[in-house]
Length: 69
Length: 463
Image 1 (cartoon, chains in turn green, purple):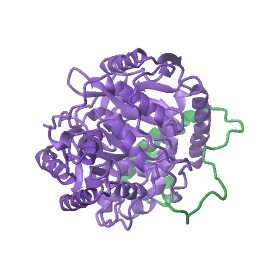
Image 2 (cartoon, chains in turn orange, cyan; image 1 turned 180 degrees about the vertical axis):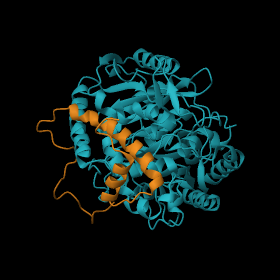
Image 3 (cartoon, rainbow over the protein chains, first blue to last red; image 1 turned 180 degrees about the horizontal axis):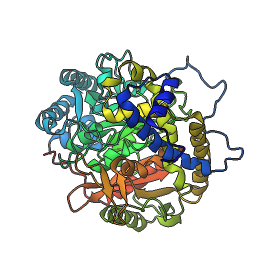
Image 4 (tube, rainbow over the protein chains, first blue to last red; image 1 turned 30 degrees about the vertical axis):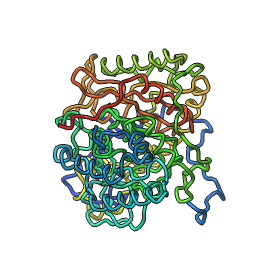
């Protein structure tokens, strides 16, 4: 297990911090899936993003909730 | 030929010419449902009485000269993530047991305004969070997966239990089941078809689109669905156009990109052969084939997961805390694990998406479309968890099915899946055509030209 991986008690603590108390019988399974997801997304750290902004763009003033559908 | 066997275009022509009444058509489709639905399980609910009533209204309107267009009187199904006023939107989940939609989704309202007849709500992989739709059986082999998450919608169209359906697509959920069931699926450009009233899996990746028997049918449905909706913050303000392709088959001057990396890696040889034959067919129609290098492929899965996982978990925040035991095990664990993803990972995925979109735009300057397999393998047996490739690599079935379709969700480009034959086991194979943003007309033109070179599509045996 690499140092970046969460142990079951750590996964439970992180989940609790996020406001999701996990029953004890789920700690190991959630840790395993969280570690797998982490291993997939961690590859993005190789990219040098420079000034690249995140994709969502906010267009001020374009929402017209009273417009006809 | 029975009315349920007609494509949307054929049925619409017959209804307009008053050779076929919407009541006959609805009755035929409902009888077909009675025959094959017990084996397929494509529907969550079938609303036969409402459908017959709507069909009678359509018949009366058309008889009185109030013909609304090609969807008038046509039986269709909606993936059960799509709100219809007064009906449950179950998301194929026990979490939604007591749900009732207060209003129509924008797409349901637009189809109703076009006169389409709702026959029922179709199964999804629970909350669209999966690629198999385990409740539903493949239309060509009931021992095999339907694909997902719009599995019910694709199976219904393939088996003749709906003349067309709508699905949703966050990583491939329209195109994957379309390919695995031998029908056409269109994921439009991000923001072209409004999502208001459609249960989200991942806001920044979600799309709604048609599943049909022919490319021409998909164009008819898209024409009714597309257009700005102020209730969807991602909705584009593009003018409404008629997407119906012309009858011309000449593709002279079109440049079709053929990927030299990624899209043909770890692809079943029979799938690759069928897609390359179809690409050769495009060349014989006059298209020029151009080698293309797909950019940033190492980061596709990471970007897809980095966006989808935390967005899905955020959507389910309340119910995951209130009724976690009502979710299916595979969905619950993904939602729980998503709580543990740091914001930094999500932002990296959003920044990676910016890079990917820029690089895809650059690539699409040199070609009009890209042609590739929709999925790397045909439908696997229900319960099969991995696919082993000839080099010994094992890949999860869901990872494999989403691998070639997710780039269009990340970049928002349109993608059309078209059937291009069957493997030796008789299972359908799909080719996807990817285009420039708002390049639907080019995809539909090329897909339609290709289909005209092929025998007319037949329904799945549904046995």
